[in-house]
Length: 402
Image (cartoon, rainbow, N blue to C red; front, side):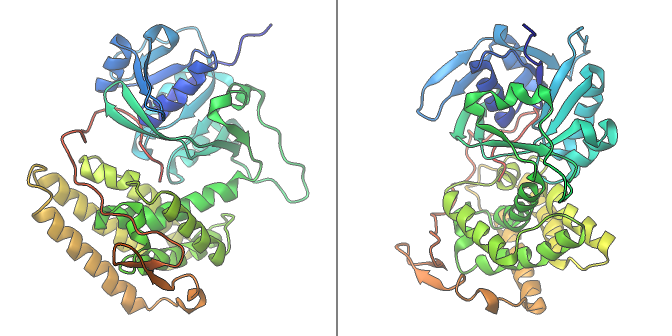
């Protein structure tokens, strides 16, 4: 019997480690690509995993292979059949350099990153036929190096990077992907129309992440009357830009329904961009809203709100890094956040986006906190401040993808 395909998880932060653990539970022995304190912990102690039920267990280093990109790499004779990239966009180029050394001639690269930059970079290196798109709703946190806490059980959806013609049969998954598709806890599926799934995710990230980070709120707060109009305005600006770039897109009413559903389902979550800001890490706003700005330029369309979000988030991130985190969250970062949202809202009002078509969706209601939000959408309590447990590590990967 042929051995199972060799899987490499490139960028083992919180999410990558959690997905790798699902593979190990299914009997696979994946290659984990990491660096810094995370790689040191994995190498010497293994992976400590806290499951959703609170159970903590240790996965010993003997159950996976480890490549450290911060050390001189001696590439083994094993060639990788599937490389799952789970890092941030600005880390992709270095990992692609590594994958060129270890990927089998027929190996497949699966990009599971925010934005569209990772898939474009992978396609330019390996060709569209060898690149698979992925999106996931699995979620995890990195408690400390080598210790991952699962925060949500979701799905992993894979699909071709090339659009399928309307009159053509849907393409089957590459055989090597059986290692992922047959892994029960990954809940992995193949979707020949994944382009629409990826587009919806980019649209949601563009409308939610930067505003949540600048306002420093959990997702549910975006459903309140102060921030919901801004979220909706970014969605309205972004959707036609994506459509003009040839991306498959939902209708505006479908997009608004997606926003409402996500904000309700993740009301207590802090999005990955807010976490990055709190931890002093580089965010992916340039790969999300910045990608929308680039699309707009190519199509000759304006994108003032997305442009401003990129600029404001950069200013806010710089202020967050400059302000000591032991001052209770007061001071420069609070001032910059309020100024940033004021500037954004002034531009939003000046542009006067038409919201009348969604009067039924934006009707406000009073809730138990004495605040208002879109009909049917809960408003969560404010996000907690950064604490001593929110530390930044020099490792790959992400926490929540939304």
